[in-house]
Image 1: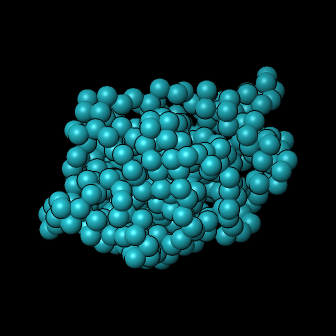
Image 2 (image 1 turned 45 degrees about the vertical axis):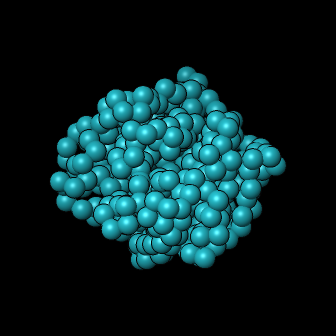
Image 3 (image 1 turned 120 degrees about the vertical axis):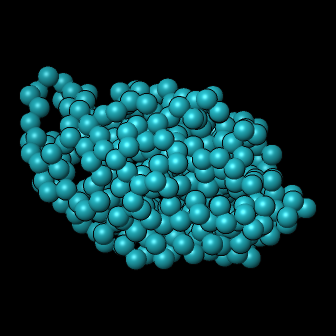
Length: 341
């Protein structure tokens, strides 16, 4: 299968492209390097991988790239840590809406009512569509029952799912919606547009909790500064597991016109995460922390129901947070020394 992946230089896509290539697919990646600048991956010179540099809002370019593709993974978006939810509240909805509209315009044309080569679009949504939900564990469908997300980012991600609905109803375009939960792994660096946000005596990396806590502990911050009281619940899911889940959703016939929460089943509080990182880096030294004011839209509880992905796709995220950290900590240590974080 030949697959177009937009946002190919992004964090999750770094895992996804490798997963698709290992599964035998041919991949075209599209990215404009607006987040990190040019970066290198081990698969850049793979015989079945082509990287196009360009704007995911360029409908003509997307149509050209899709002309020979069987599938489209729409992953391009402006995305960052929680600090951006307020600071770029307009850009996160306006620019991402333009990216989404371009993706669906091109996909509808490439599908051509079933006459074209394109078979399906897989939309990378977000757990933030459940931002206002109070149903736990949160199943697929709850995003339509609960109040809409309070952040413009969450609202726009929900809008991508309505784009899929509209394109299916009007143009018969098949879709799959995947919602990654709290991706963790290697590959996140300080974004080009970052400005200085301090957490105690350390500049935050990107306001994503895992790399920020890791870098603060590595830099010797004591007591450790955490945002909020540390009782926020998350499901930290390894990027390799998420990539496998997305790849299965791309391939599986039972995924057509369905949506899936892709996540570990393990709940972890921010405080539990911080203590685990502290022990891995500083051993038996007493763990000390202080709480700083949280950012707006810092959801207190995010617990997905993962039974549908298990039942329909046979997918389970199997990598533990502890195992993920054993890979992440040395990588962040190298990035600190190289000036990337």
